[in-house]
Length: 147
Image 1 (cartoon, rainbow, N blue to C red):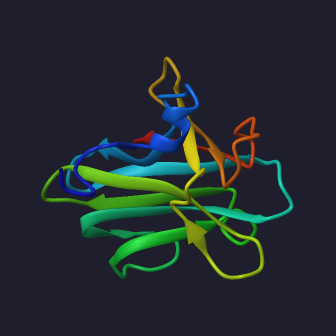
Image 2: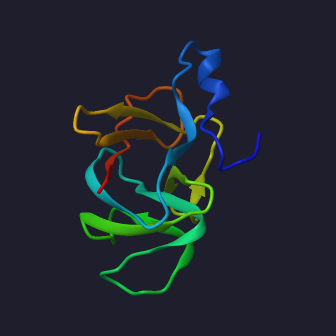
């Protein structure tokens, strides 16, 4: 299994009986796909954000036409709503949650992960946990909508 090609689940949560906690999400996209990322809420004092990546790169048209291999969006510095243009040969968009509790960006921790709620209109709501098993997955909530 190649990273960035398929969704990865957090095995630590699976051992606790939660087999739907996603460590690294992969969504299908078209080359040139526009997505809307919206920050919904933050339920922790730690800095929270998300990381996006494709195999050809991502542009945030309102900021620049430069194509970046990956994009990091922090809840406290990014606009509440961000439109990204995603370029891809393989049709995959990688997504995972990040955080900073004062020691720099962290992600993919032993007890980090996301729950995803897909709405009827196709909008995906991500509910994130930065670390710890005692969680209600409200450290960060954001949505991704394909446009």
